[in-house]
Image (cartoon, rainbow over all chains, first blue to last red; front, side, top):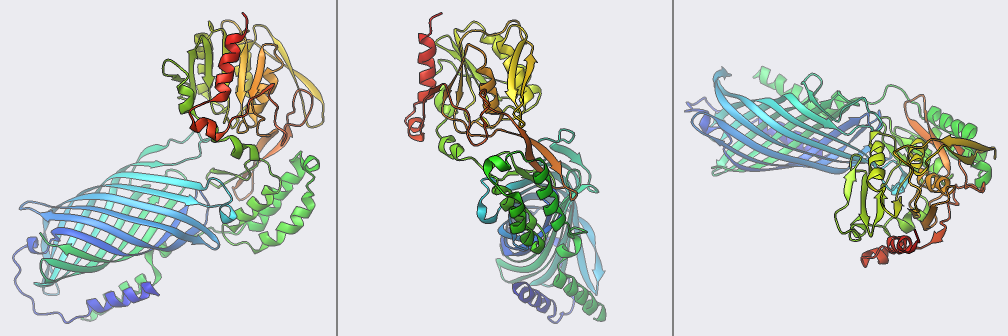
Length: 259
Length: 334
């Protein structure tokens, strides 16, 4: 129900009348410079064949902190996010999960083009990232087992990020980003009896990686405070060991203090 | 304008479903009742303790099969766990499909003694820091010319080869303490390997199997010369399985004494069985006994010298069992 309310709100935000196009100096005016606090709700789906073939799903709060700034020749984002839940469910079985990541994006202006008579600006750059995933699974009823089954994964990635900014007017803009890991140092907890597999591997994006897509609408009516509402899809996939996939649909609100 | 509306509508539809649900799917087929019947059948065929534990395994099937039939998803783990808990066996584990094992039972003496033992307190009895070896699984040293070696597992691996070097290092001591308190067991072959350092010629050891047949097996000495001076093996309620087999067999040597508290009572030899679905189950199919033929399962092994120890002893900084051993070995005439 909460998810549907957010969806309708987001849909409504896209509908306001589009004003006449104006001349905008450069992308520096629309880059999200400042310190941001983000909160929202995430619908998570997780499958880790180290634990079982079943998928677990549930809702969890989503938090993030961001510090971004733009200089003459480049911009950067430094973002930390966290999801922590005890309520991933597979029928009457539950699992706890913590996911956190820290990413750094160095963004370079690669030009702009026109879309519906307005300019859309693009930035591209490398994006190293650290991702950590921990899951705890209570296999016994009522917590009778002393130890839960657990699973752990980590990715230390060098990736790439593409940002797009679509200003509608001085105070309202749409933004989006795509991020993907390219090469990663990945680690996963494995069966200690399985001596044929290594705990740590260097992996390529077609086998193991983290991918995300984000779209948002930003309002700067009350400068220096900017308000943003958006959607982020995050997907992590590891196949070098027992298959693991974690995906999340995140709806968020962001408050930015513009620097 | 029309393009924008179509684009937003498509986005709206995707968000209604959730990309995460679209991308990740569940298993292709259901195997719950099959898992239950296979697991129950394996125990029925191989488990050696039904009569000793007075468990009617057919009645257990009648109770749990309806629950298994109603299971969805991973709920079958709960049914298997509850069913096997009835056997109160620390050697029965359920493995997740990737190999993570969950014990179905921890024996009562484990809870009594698991915190009445502390490596930090032990280190205070040694004038120099204890040395580490064998992938840091061995901790050893010398105090009052008494050798000491501690380890918490008898698992297989190349790490056990360091025991030969440790015994060479301790060869000039007047006695040795082998501390296997809080040792959860492992491989009988590791126990045999360690035992081989305490003999200087081919030695016969005996045991009993589940059919109460006595059998003899021989071990050959390892190392420059066997350690024939006094040996004390420290055990407690958290010593389990191979950490009970080892001291009980070692007691067949004249120079070995077992000291501490009654051990956990894990007398089964566990074997891993793989179900058709990929889940695994470890369950005993044989067992070992005390030297007099008494079943070790649930009973444990009794120390030659009983020295109980409590959590309060450890919290006050005293390892009474280790103090007793050091004083005992110092008093032994050489």
